[in-house]
Length: 298
Image (tube, rainbow, N blue to C red; front, side, top):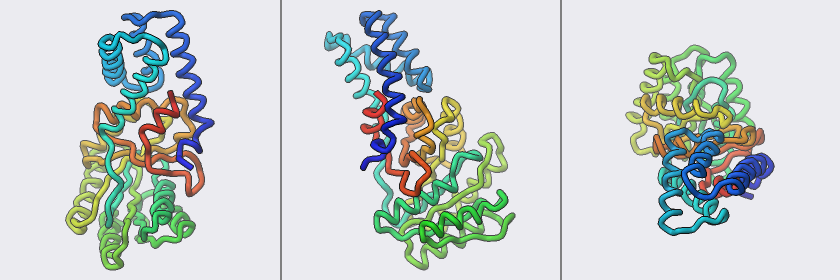
């Protein structure tokens, strides 16, 4: 079962909402400037940024004019095609092995839970997994990760609370290399993207992995709460500047009726969503599929 089959109920609300807005738009407007202005407003109301909404509408407008087709089904299909292409332009291949995935982000987005779900995901693909508890600041963070590691039946590398997170990563990399582990998942402390000292710490962790495990496919993924809305783009921009992100893990996708910022991440920052979470269970996380996502919301 695809991830968006699991999400059908939540996405159906979004789809119904967008479809109703488009139906009303078509019923009162012929294709023209007013129509395209309202189409832009509909996209912005779904958390697509102004810049990206303008780009999408311009592409729809240009193609609709060139092909002289104006019916509702055509324009809706054209919108789906353009949105799908926008996501596919930044898509990446699944990781090669050995790989290291370091999860970064602000507090409360679900990084530790996501490590557990990613462990389950890679185990289901027949890969060996080690997790590193590099969140050494939050009280009981390593204990929480230990519970997930136990549930997923994977090894965990951790130090005492207050330890240097880069030291945890060094030991975890050494262990993964010695045991020829396929996947090393790194949990990091939540940090505000505006705190320069904390972003510098991320850069240090990045350097440790790059220096000690150059043969690994190293992915730095920003964990974003899907209910964040427009602020997600500014968060992503600042984390990207700090550590050159490779993509996004979207959590709580079952808790939002919008999610349009996904298109802005792709269009403005060339950052793809790589994994998406749709629930609380271990198996409720999958590799992101652009076409299924667009089909699910439009």
